[in-house]
Image (cartoon, rainbow, N blue to C red; front, side, top):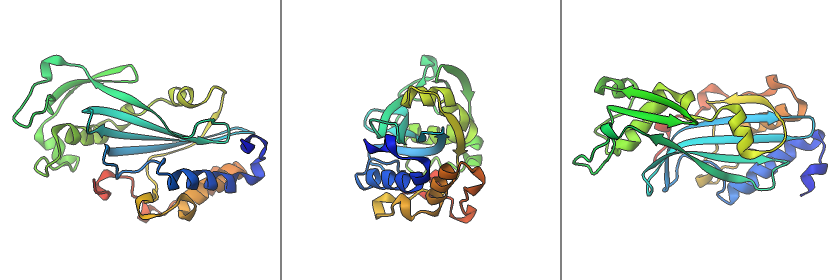
Amino acid sequence: MKSDTVMSGNWAVQILETLDSHAEDMNFPTFENNNFSAVDMRLTVFRSDKEWLLAFEVIAFANSQNLFVNLIYGYGNHLFEQGMRLAHEISLLDNLSIFEDTEGSFVNRFSFVSSVDGKVKDFVFYRDDYEIAGVDLTCGDTIELSLLKLLAFVTPNDLFLSGDALIKALVEEEITEFIKLEDWHHPDILNDELPSQNECFKSIAEALMHNKKKLYFCDPDKVNTHWSLWEY
């Protein structure tokens, strides 16, 4: 891969070309996926003098497998394999709170124990908690999907991997976190919008190339990374 020889002065073009290539192949994170119903997304950008790395985490419900997962996508000039790399399972542990209801679900949406990246937590929720989070329990979502939407609202950081765990999942060498984003304008690749046409991603590429975080800018009015702004 030629990218190992490309100096940082050319990174902006290289980054956008890499992202565009995988977006065109549909190997790029999106909220609109028939297999995975996404409820949250985070983008962590890493940098060193010789390397750039963009790591997306997509918190989603795997519809056919009935699993809560963190889908990890990686793009970088030192990555041999780019795009979706692995699905990190988010576990529900408490058998006492798991039952089969009239909807065929085995999850109690009001009381359960979760395990994410080795961290175990007890949760007890009420209908008001769902309402506060903007989750409509009558909209037709499965119990699992509505529960994951609530978790993304109540405890978002606990659903994602730590920075060190994310690096280990993608690369072997040391690399420094540059920017971490939870709100940005994500390209709608299903409607042929490419990252290179997106002002947020263009500014990420420029910031990385010049090693200046202040160059990153995303119009707050265009932010669209909340699940309510996408149709499943």
